[in-house]
Each structure stands twice: as C-alpha cells, then as structure tokens.
Length: 176
Image (cartoon, rainbow, N blue to C red):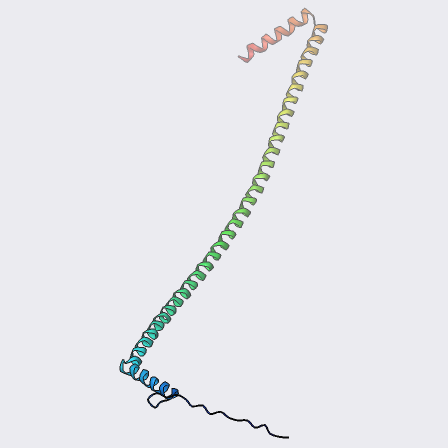
C-alpha cells in the first residue's frame, strides 16, 4: 500500500495595518463591548429586566387575586346551589304533601257525596212510600165509605136513620 501524498498550498492572507481578518474581528468586538460599557447598557438592560420582572410580579399578584376571587365565587355559587337544591327539595316535598292532602280531601268529599246522595235517595224512597201508603189509605177509606154508604143504604131505611140521628143529637147535648 502506498500512501497518497499531496501538495499543500499556502495562502497568504491580506492584512491591513498589520492585522489580519481575525484580528479586525477581535478589535471590532472590543470596540463594541467598550461602547456598550461606556453607554451603561448593562444597567439599562438590568432596568429593563427589573421592569419586566415587576410587570410579571404584578401580573402574578393580579392572577393570585383573581384566583382568590374566583374561588370565593365558586364557594358562593356552590353554597347557593346547595341552598337552591334544598329549596327545590322542600318545594317538591311541600307539593307532594299538598297533593296527598288534596287527594285525601277529594276521597273524603267523594265518600260524603255518595253517602249524602244515598240518604237523599232513601229519603225520596221513604217519601214515595209514605205518599203511596197515604194514597192507599185514602182510597181504602173512600172505598170503605162507599161500601158503608152502600150497606147503610141497603139495610137502613128512614126509620133507622131517624133513630141514629136522635142518638147523635142526644150525644151532642151531653158533650156540651
């Protein structure tokens, strides 16, 4: 194996005032750093950073305050929700109790109505029975009176009537 050999070219770099390009770069960096220090740029950067830090601290404080307010509002909302749930449960329980009471009253009223109508029907039946009995008695009395008149007319003559009339008149004079 043979090693490859080559030629190296040497380049000559241009210089100005005895400084090559890397020297000029270093010198320009030193000038920039000197200007920055001379203009007090680190202090200005520090002030800007301090201002930014203060702004961030204010934002964090505001965020903490807002979080506390939000937590307080959440607790308040949860309390109101619990109270609302309790109120809703109470309203439902009250409505159910009223419904049960109305149902019981309706059942009682219906029972009373049925009983009242039953008594009215019984009273009407009893009145009809009394009317029917009175009519039967009246017809019986009328029939008896007609039958008695017919019997008296057949069996009694004027002489028997005279004795009855005299007896009735005698009974009247004693009564007075």
